[in-house]
Amino acid sequence: LLCETEITRTITLSNPGSQDETFTITTQGDINDFSISTSGGTIPAGGTATISVRYTPTAGQRSIVIIISSPALAQPYRVTFTAIGVTRQLRLSVGSATIDVGQTKLIPLRITTTPDAGSLVTNLRIQLDYPITGVEIDDATFQQLQNGWRWTLQHTPAGAILDGTSALGILNGTLEVQLPMITYVNTLLSHTITPTLLNSASYPCLVVETQNGIISTPYYCAQETRQIVLVGPTLMTTRYSESGDLVVNLLIGEDIEYRLELYSPIGTEVMHIADGNQRGEFIYALPRASLPSGIYFLRLITPRHHQVQPIMLTQ
Image (cartoon, one colour):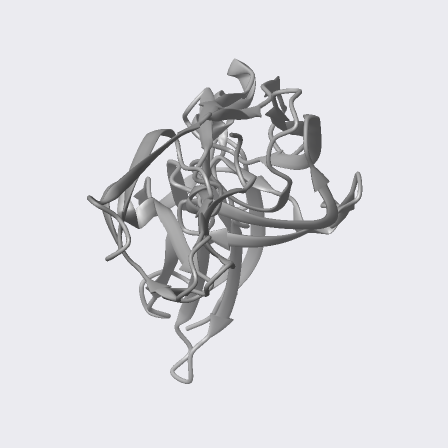
């Protein structure tokens, strides 16, 4: 017997005598796998009574012994039933692909069953485990209705859970679900997607097999994690304090060497004000009495930036 089939066998007790006869039954064996019902505990004179034995298969062989006792019998009568539940394969397999960082590609999730008259699968709850820092299912392009099945998508810290339902179900053959997978910048070159059937207990005769999928990222995409550097602006501004001192504000937007110097109008270095090699905001003050009155030039130099600004110093 295959999954979700059912079979009933009936034992008929006849009483050809002229008076009613009573009977009792007891059971031995795999009694939890069978259901027993009777038409009553009395066999009317000239009539019959029945005992029904119903079996819904689980994987493997099961047996039950029905023992019938009655004052009309010289000794108890024993009836043995043996049933075999035949398993059925259901295979979950995830496709593989190579996807550039930031791109989306459809990856097939295939649910395949053997071509027999087995159980009708109308509900699937599938867990997909994968590293969400590297790949993810794209909600915006995921299609909830596919091949007569309606799917809902739930993201988890370890991947996602797909819940699928269909009135028609799947009896045999292959059901395919397209998953739009998007990749992110990550140091790993490959990401494994592992499928698991969470509601396998609903189909006790099914033997579930799985096949992982692998999403690969090209080497140059993985290298981007070592090339990305956040760079801000590099600026120099000046102002005068209430006491007349010159105040220089520097904004260095990246970790890079810089020098701040003061020059005369003929290009002679008058003062080395500051240097460094880290990003940040810096403030430098030149007291008004530190240099003679006149026109000077501030120069900010980095490997990527060169800024000159004229200033006026007065006593």
